[in-house]
Length: 129
Image 1 (spheres, rainbow, N blue to C red):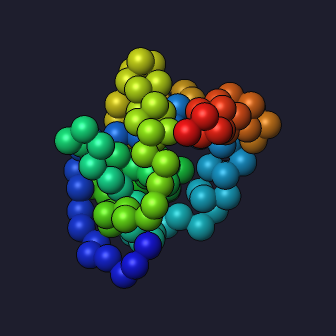
Image 2 (image 1 turned 120 degrees about the horizontal axis):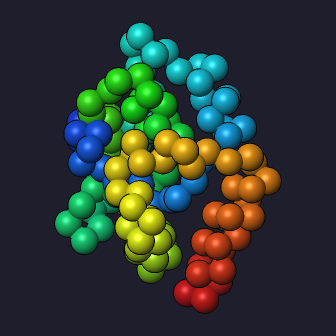
C-alpha cells in the first residue's frame, strides 16, 4: 500500500471478511495493545458492494472493539487483491451472521483450527480464481 490517507470509520460500519480469529494471534495482540489509549496502524479497508470491508487487521479491529472503541483507524486498501475471493468470503460471513466486527465474539479458535476452518477454505476458492 502506498502512503494513504488515514480516516475514521464507525466500528459498526466496517464488516469483516473472515469468519474466525486465530486465538494465538489474538493473545499476541492483546499483549501490546494499549486498551486505555488505542494506537495501532490503520486497518486496510475496501468498499465491497457499497460497504467498508476489512481486507486485513481483523484481530486488531476486534481488540479495538473489546477496548470499547466506537470507530476504527482505517486506510483505503489499494493493493492488487483477489476480489472474487474476498467477495466469496464476505458472502460466507453474511450467511453466518458475521456482519460487524463484534460478531467475531465466540469465533476465536486455536491456530490449528484457524488454518483448517478458515485459511484452507479461502485457499480453495483462491486456487480456482
